Image 1 (cartoon, rainbow, N blue to C red):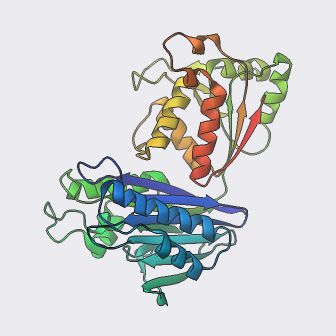
Image 2 (cartoon, one colour; image 1 turned 135 degrees about the vertical axis):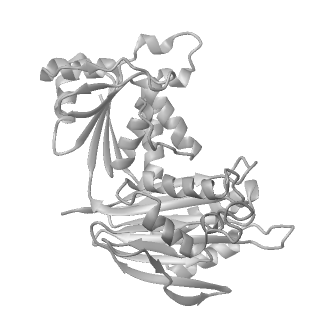
Image 3 (cartoon, rainbow, N blue to C red; image 1 turned 60 degrees about the horizontal axis):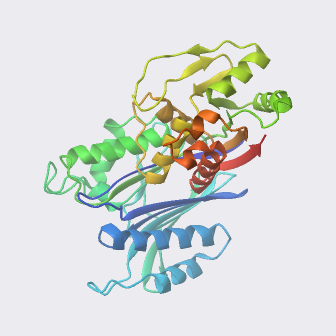
Length: 382
């Protein structure tokens, strides 16, 4: 059985800050997945720059096999120095997991990662300390199995509640208690990450005193998905596109009424439309036998792209088409995007943003954003 690693990311900015000082980068190749959570010094723009540089340098170098000592040295020599504190400082947690289940965890000044295994209590991962230049870094070797869950977080989680409901902050013991009692560990990685951040918001009485980020990694069987959107440029390709859509053992989604009608006609499958608007800005969904999700096309896809670009994903308890589609996309590890290139005249309505009228542009952007989150995406044009 092929195992994979479902990654959920949830962040909340410090109060009155536009940018988050915590940054998460995910890189994946055929051998391993690298996840980096970095927390920049302070908050706002400066912190975001420090964290972004750290996360991108670390993830891109490690996925290419560069030794950790060189990665740490590169980060130290690259980060700009804060003129106020005279420091070039960014904490980080780096997790590299290989396909055979072995893992390598590196932690520098972030709260300790938690390992959840079967029915055992959360296990804080301290690791062995090693000196790299001026930095003491904790290293932990892992042997992960199906069903294991790893949780990385910034210090905004352990500091949650300071000057609010928890004068001394949540702390590590409070985080362990939260994981045992207050969140749904059986939920998807994304929903679990959102629940952790939501609990921190509650302890902080809705006013976050620091950037707060939770990253959840679940070890589970590989999930493949295929999304069909848009009619082919040549109608003679309709059958080939539908055949590709139903090929193999995959979860399936259709985005677009015309696309759903093509599948319905060629496979003799009924479409059951739901005319209720959960969100007045997002068209309703439909149901079709053998297909996991059927949504409207460009409007729904554009909303998904906007949410992914914002980095502030919140899909818990949301039932509109865009949230359901985003939840489906995040649940897949490998996604084939079957994109028809025929232009819908309705998308060229005057006053509509030009980029939204081109389905191919939206799907290309979606491909890029999912790839940035470590998904294996393949575009197929018709």
